[in-house]
Length: 236
Image (tube, helix red, strand yellow):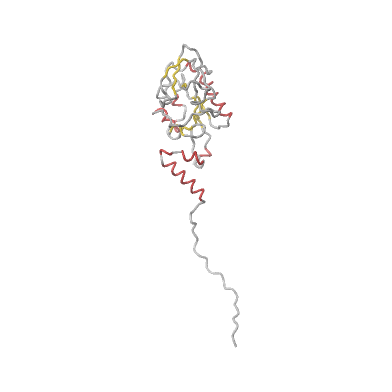
């Protein structure tokens, strides 16, 4: 006669095993973002470029944007020029503080951006394309990146738009970014033909701070630089 095997009751639970270890593998999208950040932070030539394209690194940067129309030397003073920069930036929702890219009687252009940001942040156009590797680079060489436009606050390329017939910009500065004595149209208050302000032609690749003394009655491009960032939440 064949014996029948009947299962017994379940035994007691075994001892707990050793703690497990995570594989450490993140989602592919996260890995890609981190890799792009690594490249942008460790390759000087490509610094910030990849971050602007994929919008994952969120590094702070300084925007350089033109006013929406050319101006004579009569801008109601440096405060009037600053106010135009501020209001036009606010009108399109830009959160940083903008100042006119000008020297004046009591202001050196080079000092507009705070010292801590001068060699660490790229200067970009309205579309976040890099114009200069840093603020200091403008005064050490002054040559923009090839093929990168300067846009106005309303999105026009000032070097290719007929609203700016003169492709020259006011700056009132020496090539090193200091105020140029008596060459800033009476602190940007006067559009008199007999007075002069220092300006720079933008075509030809000669840089932003070429030394061209021009009549204050001329209507030229005025640039605005972002000098106070609201980026604390974006820093990595």
